[in-house]
Image 1 (cartoon, rainbow, N blue to C red):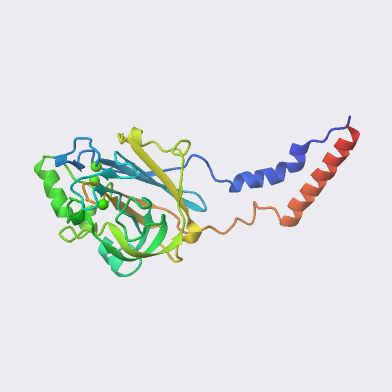
Image 2 (spheres, rainbow, N blue to C red):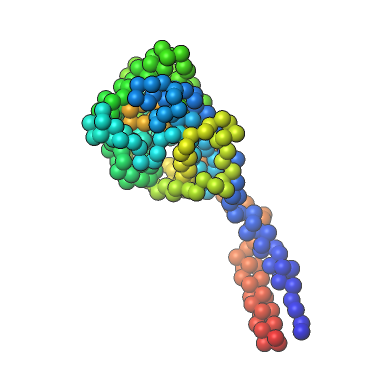
Length: 287
Ligand SMILES: [Ca+2]
Ligand SMILES: [Ca+2]
Ligand SMILES: [Ca+2]
């Protein structure tokens, strides 16, 4: 029986496909938070419900990936002190502008991800990637800290250290003003996908971040507005500001041009498929 070496026939095409396939384990940039600046039932840094441990960001050619490690479930937590008897995640703000947090919101250049669905006091309830039109603080109706100074002072008095991941946060935020932790209004510009956290190359534990909850999601770079810089500051707080976390990272916000050298011409791929199909047909008839 005559046989054909299909790997030789498909070799060139297979190599090209591998070159554009996303890797499964990504290279993550971590913003590790203070492990003792979460405030749970008035107690600072007891590893309670509101302790956040870290955020991480990664990318491939077409997507940006974000991950959160905390003790705070995606659905939030019941809280009798909150007006709605519930405290959820705020929105995850993405700032590519190099401007301060409130300046980026005021100039209409801030982006945000809404990830908590209806378990949230955000003005936007549908999960997705948004362009932020206006933002608001909801800590005052969630038994929380209206300003980040209020939170910092509480933590400092307890002998602990407040941080927001690896963000220079006392300069980035308006520490004495109402912390705008959710969108009031935004324009949805893309979808997000939640990811199985295994197999992504995520390793919060190696950084000492041992929160019980790890949330990972991705969105498409193609949904981002054009002209963004590669310097990203991503931050998120609980509705009560009992803890917040962030990461400063370099990413490429644009979908790269396809590399012309390694991608075969469509005609030559069709040619290879035609050759292979003929070979298979030949083999089937002779078998
Ligand atoms: Ca923390
Ligand atoms: Ca609430
Ligand atoms: Ca923090």
